[in-house]
Image (cartoon, rainbow, N blue to C red; front, top):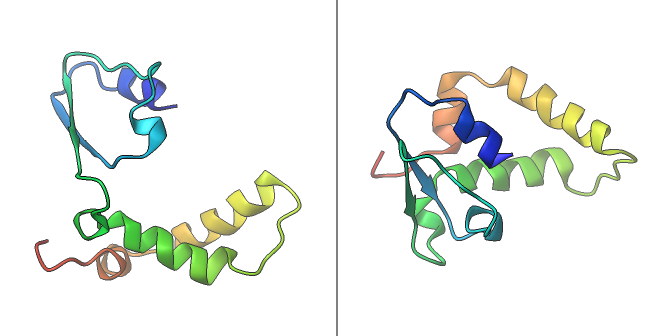
Length: 98
């Protein structure tokens, strides 16, 4: 999926920040010259503000729920994302350096 994403922006210079997740360093992951990867240090969640968003989603949307299908969990997450405002998103991802 990341390879497909990279292909969508051939005319832009992009710096993409990645954590140390396995799929961010997969051998079959390629990126064109216009995309520069920057890797966060290992075990540094304080540098990855979106981690707070995922933590909140796990706690408030998916915790202690059994989803019968992938579609069900995607629907639950989509419902939450559609209710987000820029302010709510900023609140969940707030870091002192942002």
